[in-house]
Amino acid sequence: MTEVKIIAKCAASAESAFAYVNDYRNLPRFINEINAFTPLTEQTEGVGASFDGAIGLGPVTLHSTIQIVRHEPGLAIGVKSIKGFEIESTFLFHAEGEESCTIDAIVDYRVAGGLAGKIMGKTIEPFVKLAVKSSTHNLVTQVSAFHAEKTRA
Image (cartoon, rainbow, N blue to C red):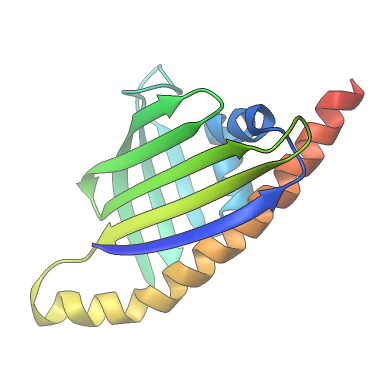
């Protein structure tokens, strides 16, 4: 698997950051490359919740069915593909006070073997790195605004 990891500081509590990411409807807001993201189960949070998604990475659109495999309120959310493009993604939230945290965005993906897989891997790798970096920046900006709004209310 190929891992891309971005660590970013955020002007929000770890609880606010977790709450924002935990709402699946926010995913397309901070991950621009998502073309579709639909719940497949009535349960939309916590271990076992499943979603169907499509993400555009440069010239390629990849489809996956993912399931939440890690859900620790205020600390971590992890998903893993159960069908389609192989991907594991984890968000870790590290509290640094009531108004600050660090978010680790970790994406592991695997392409098919053989020559076609190697070509696809080389094609999408720069797009994956850019997508994770851009998504993390968007996430930190949006979580900070979400936290500020929540603390004003």
